[in-house]
Structure formats: structure tokens, C-alpha cells
Image (cartoon, rainbow over the protein chains, first blue to last red):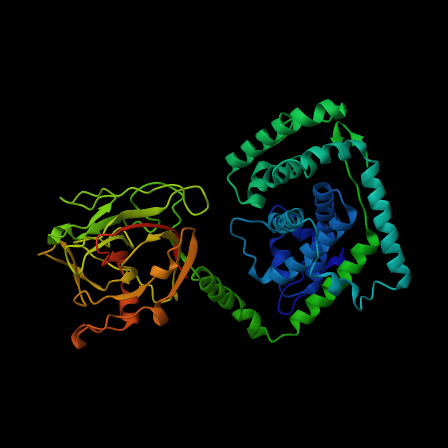
Length: 224
Length: 267
């Protein structure tokens, strides 16, 4: 437990458990503005979530990886601007990722500004690791392409306007509550419900006859 | 990765990327923290200043996405001609005769949809200074008798799209300077320049297809040569309390003009 302890000058020690409480990441985010270690803890918690979100949205392992990198670099650079007003750190991070994903779809290519920073003089990337990095992408690509249910849904999902894609992905792939989706998209909860409802109707119409997988696209078993 | 309980799962892991990204982020975070602390203390102030500067870059007057007599700043659109001075110039939409506002927008706008400000008509041949025109007030309180202006001194100019046809005479953009009180004899806001207003000739910009016009307030607007010394005023004084702008067709010698204006903003 004490391995996770952080000590800032002039403060009492605080522990990782403190941050994963009902008050969310507030203490940790405030600490991360001054201490890289605190940012590292946030990174550990959110890296898998953002990578998963980007993978679902894009269906492209390489792009998802680049978007995840860029999201965290942008979060680090803008962290000092972040305020706990109408937004949680989590919703803010998803919003950054969502913007990057939308940028990728708009331009049909993705050139992350952070790529050089990631690859140059990186102590974690020796030649062997660089090879592992490539293999990792091949495996992820294979994993996506072999998932037939996802591939069919992805095909239909990508036909929807971006705002429906975002709302549906956050609701059904990320299992987010309506209030959280509203915070990510900066929209009213009623608008989010309507986006999900309309998006589902469009998706059900086009996707289910093709898939026949019985994938549950229903709001009935979801918590608000 | 599986389809469990009817839900799609996509469990992708990239441990090598994760480790490399974390190392790069930690290095970036450490180098940031080497900067003097006052930079970070000033950062919110600098960001606010930058945001204010960005917001100040332009202000929409009217993009004409909707119909009506009121622009996006809350000021009304009106047409005018010289009939009240006994002239024979006539504008459409018709100028007010008894205080009513007959203004209507025309369609389509510059992008083939929405609306535009359009005036057409004849600047009469019966007098030397014949005119027709259209003006718009810059706030809901800019009309007579309140005549309140807004501060435009932080803007460099105005830009708008224009198209039209003019056979003779000139089309000018006019920036009046008016007092915050009525000229009771005319029922209009009182001119502070004896009507020697800042203006610029835009006749050459009228072509059959839409064209963007940018007018730099400080470089292109001039008071007329007949301005008396007592009516001279700096452009910054005019901009600091601006209540109205006009597009005017003059000295047409009985010829017809057709002017369309859209996508108006201060920049």
C-alpha cells in the first residue's frame, strides 16, 4: 500500500486508495498538476479505458494506439487548465479522446503531434521493445478483425453521424451512465437519451438483420 | 475478446506501448515542472487573456440564417430614401413613411440558402444628392431616441459578402457618428459630424456573383473632403460608441441599383 504513497512538500502523505473514492480523482488530479507521479497513477487507471474506447470507435488498432497517446499528451499539457466545474477528470479525458477520434474521421488520417515525443530517446523503447511494439499491433489488429460481432456492428456504427457513434459507444461499450455521457459530450441528459434512442433505432434497423447474434441493444437493463 | 451475455467485448492490451507512453509522459511532465513556478501561477491569467483575445477576433452582425427585421446584435434593419426631403428616389423594401418598418429579407443568401439583405430601387435624377440605402442598428438600444452605441474599438474592421448591379453613381459603406440623443426635427439620432460621416466607396466590389469585402476601419474609412474642422473626429472616437452602419447608393441619375449583402461581421 505504501508503494503508492505520494508525498508532496508541505503536505501530508496520501495514498492511491484515497483517490478511488466517491469523490473521484479530485485529489489526484490536483496533485498531478505538480507531481508527475500522480499523473502516472491517473495514467495507469485510464490508459486501458481510453485505449478500449478508441479501439471500439475506430476499429483500427494502430489509430487507437496513436489516439490514446495523443489523448494523454494533451491531458498532460492542458491539465493546469482543468477545473472541477461541470466536468470530472474522466469525462474530460473521454472528451479529448472523442475529439481526436472525430478529427481522425474528418480527415481520414491521423498524425499525432506526440509521436516524436513518444519514440525519441524513450528509455522504455529499446530495439527489442520496438519489435514488440509492432507485434503488439499485429495481435491487436487480429483480435479486432476476428471479432465478427464487433466488425459487423462497427460497419453499421461508422455509418451513423459522429455524435450518435459517440453516444452509443459510451453507453454500450463503456457502460457509462447518462449523466456521465452528458458530461463527456457537453450535452443535456435529455439530449443524450434522445441521441441514444434515435441512434439505437437506426442501428437496430440496419445491424440486427445482418448479425443475428442477439447482441443486446436495449436501454431497459441499463442504469441511468 | 468475446460475446458474453449479449455484449460485445473487445479486450485489447498493449503493454509495450503503455510502458513507452508512460515513460514519455513522465519525462515530459518532469521537464515541465523544471520551469519557474511563476509561469504556472500566471498560466490561468494568460489562458484567460488568450481566450478573451480569441473571442474578440470577430463579432457576428448578421449571417442571415433566419428571416426577420432584427440582426444578431438585436438591432433592426431599415431602408431609407430621400422622399422625406422631397426627392424622387425610391427603395425596396419601402422606407418608413409613418414610423413603420417595412423591411424584409430576401433569399437565397450567399451560400444558396438562408437569407440576405437586399435593396433595389432608383436614386432619383431630380436632385444632386439623391440616395437610397439600408442601415442596421448595432444593439436593441441603438435606435432613436435612446441612440446608445456599442464599443467597437477592439475590432479592426468589417467584412461582408456583397453582390449586385449598379449602372451609374456610387455605392458607399457609411459609418455615422451619432449622439445619444434625438434630433427632434428629423426624428433620428443627432449627427455629431454634421453628416460628414466616415465612409468608403465600394462600387467596384459590386459584381454579379458574391464577393467578400473587407473594410479596415482605420485605413479605409475617411471623412468627406467637405468636412469642416469642427466636424472632424477621430475614427477611434466613432468606434468607441457606434450605433449604426449603412450601405448607401448615391447620385444614380435615375438609374436602378440592386444590392445583396450577407454574412456580416466585425473582425
